[in-house]
Amino acid sequence: MALSLSECYLETILSGTPVSRWRGSSCEQMAQADGKVLALGVLAGAAGISLAAVWYQSRRAVASSAGTGTYRPGLYTRSNAGSVALQGGQAEVLDRLGALIQCVSELKEEVKALKETLPHLQDHVRDELRGRIGARKASPLNRTTPTRRKRASGVTRAEGQSSEEAESEGGYMTALTDSEEEDRKAEEPLDDLTALLRRADGLHECKGDKKKQGLSTLLEKKEKFDQKCQYLWRLTRAYADAHDLAGDSLEKKKYAEKGKQIGAQAISVNPVCAESHQWYAILCGLLSEYESVQNKIKNGYLFKDHLDIAIKLKPQDPLSYYLLGRWCYAVAQCTWIERKIAATLFGEPPSSTIQDALQNFLKAEELCPKYSKFNYVFLAKCYKDLGQKTQAKKMCESASAMSIVTKEDEEAQKELASLLLSL
Image 1 (cartoon, rainbow, N blue to C red):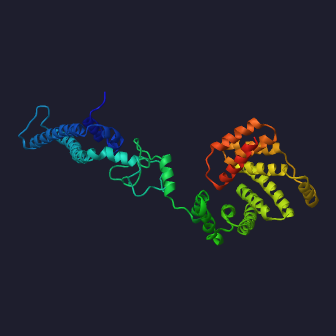
Image 2 (cartoon, helix red, strand yellow):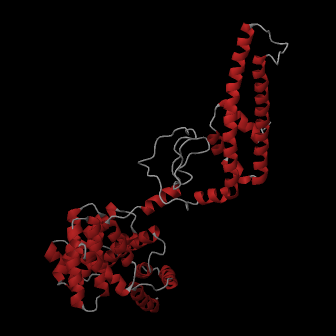
Image 3 (cartoon, rainbow, N blue to C red):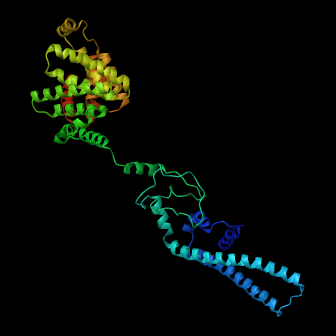
């Protein structure tokens, strides 16, 4: 049978268990109970204990009168030895009663504080669970090992700590929840490099002039971070973005040349960074558009070699497969004269087939469905060249269903229109 609230308090007092601990383990129940009924029950229990204390005090007064001869209970002997034994027993009882009265006084203070807390307890607990209370959180470095709660005189929980950082119902310290851990990490200040990289990534996803700001933003910190691989490959990417947004060929070539230099530096700093190899290959491809035939073929070899490395280092990146598909398709379309020139200059001309290109485009689609409008256009071109017009039309339909967002999408739409006329 469940004990009443007053009986729980009395059992707590007599057993020596701290009252504050009993309160801590019952917070959740009190938050759900009716405040007034609970308070009245506690007061009734306290009143009962108070009456018992008064009764014992009256007995004490009567017992004290025994020394003057006004009271002679028949149960006790009038001998001096009996009187001494009686007084010793009474002293022990009185000491216990004194401790009981003190506990009752403390209980009254507890009840008074409880009555003041009950109306707001539910909101307080809810706010703590949501993490809205507290100006600061305890650091994991300063968190102590699990310990039992101390008595009421000990250090209380700081107001700024969350409920999960506080002691649990059983009196043990608990760890942070996942959401609180994420909040703590979010509040930690970012170092300069991380903040810069995040800003650069955000600008790369923008359009127009705002996208071009990525280059100037990164160049401002070049002296500070020019030996950081994560910075350098993003700077290479920013030069590629600037190339795409430039107006004339001379400006485009300038961005491509500078970007290729930065890409080579990124690889030298960290040869096993997939993004460095990937963007270095892209800049080689961009620069080949403004070079002589000899340099164009040379950049083509560099393009292929570094894409192979990027795929080996990061095989789940669809961009590398898409780019390799473009290279395979371009090589498969080379004329006999271009192959002869390549053979004369480098001993062995690059070789690839439409089937090789198709497999790379399909791999990009497998890793990331609806990867890009251009990927569908090149899939359609491959199927058309292989004589599979039905599949080519399906790819054209998929390309048409994708919206036009980037400048590359606009170019893909133009090629799609001319491709549809040939099917």
